[in-house]
Image 1 (cartoon, rainbow, N blue to C red):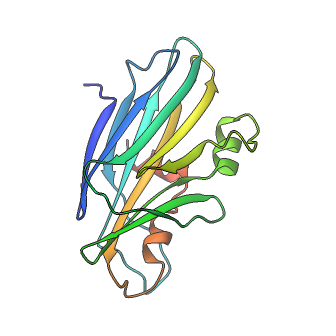
Image 2: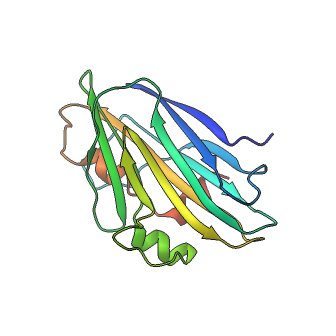
Length: 179
């Protein structure tokens, strides 16, 4: 069964994942959720970690693909916490930290040959508690894969930045673990 929408439960609420396209075929788009064991520095730990993977192959060129992740009802504001190769945002609610991460423009661009980012085009954005990966153009007959990693921990974390390290997962590893 194909699905281009997916709900993922976290300790602080439900995340809604969705994929849309302005042009091209996303009828066969598939979103899957899998547990992913974080590879983080010794002494660090998280309470949970999941990957959400988008796979789609279109017989026509894709335009304006948006893979989004948004909170169903959570009103707490999110804050950016990015690093090299990683775009990430975090939310704290009821003594729990949830962090969501994905590849930054440099890593994403190198992997899928994105057009160059500019001051008016950056593929990964967050606003109104929704994170979006926007791919302006993608060729036909080549599988498009994108991901988000969701990790959570109690606040304060036993070791600072554990969730941040947990959401920094190379795309190749997500593909291997979320078959």
